[in-house]
Image 1 (tube, rainbow, N blue to C red):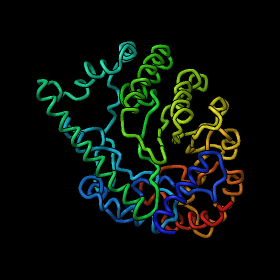
Image 2 (cartoon, rainbow, N blue to C red; image 1 turned 120 degrees about the vertical axis):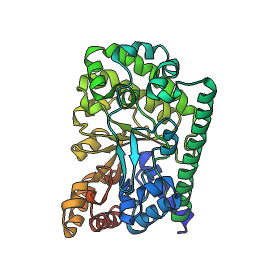
Image 3 (tube, rainbow, N blue to C red; image 1 turned 90 degrees about the vertical axis):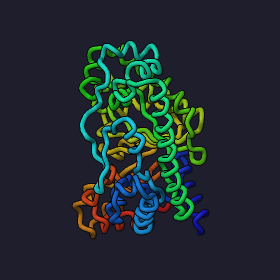
Image 4 (cartoon, rainbow, N blue to C red; image 1 turned 30 degrees about the vertical axis):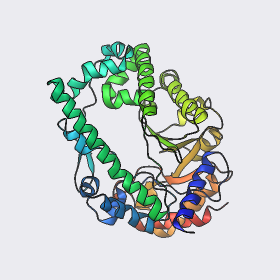
Length: 387
């Protein structure tokens, strides 16, 4: 197959499995982030900020050596230059990777949830913007200039990444899965507004106010999302689910699940998007609740932990299981043990379809898995995973 045919073949593997059809073979999509840059010996800072050819070359090295059917993400997810307009964000980047400077998640108090629920746009613009970015406490004219420059920097960052994704698909014949990311409203409250301690207090002390604020935030975020340039080819949308597994199941069902279900109904059932959820931590206590998700929707769940077979069986028809390759096996197992590990996983999870093979955690550096074990696992999976 030429590169275009190979690209279309690989896209069809994912399209078939997401549509609850049995594909030609199990699609291979490990969640590799900055591991690829470490493997290629390329500076992450230079690849993210200065020369997108370096980023492409790192991914080329990775996909040339490791048999995969998709690149989960090109990993350059933070518009650092745009953030410098406001004094820098919470992330920094150097030759080794991206780090968080410290917790800056608490931007508002719990008693402000009521104000948020009455109008997210007004609350953000009139109260939180200056609180988050003191540089905005200046004349309207200067703020306009600052915002114009930020929009320019944002567009340059998107073009920078877009060129890499286009080259990966056209020159390597490998699709890039994550091209657009959206948040569930409670995860946005956690990450950007109240931090972990704050939102956990809200769940206990003011659940109704939190739900009302999430309802307004959901509508505001969906409106912004629909106004953006969403992927039109494979229509794959990604969402990391950070907070649910820190909630009691009854709180999850009451406060979080309604938005998750509504999002699936809006974007997958109604609009035909493939939704990919990063199901962080242990979801075993929540499987019965997830039975109420729409059947037949294109929803994929990347599960970090839990009983894979039970998850796949319980969510059959409602969510495709993504995972199965333990990063700890890539790190600690002997190379000669890898084939047996992969075979056991495929014998358990591949029958009947509904399975994408990938790592249970994001691979950030070479400590997350030796190249020898990784190549061995994916090479054997490519052959053994044929239906």
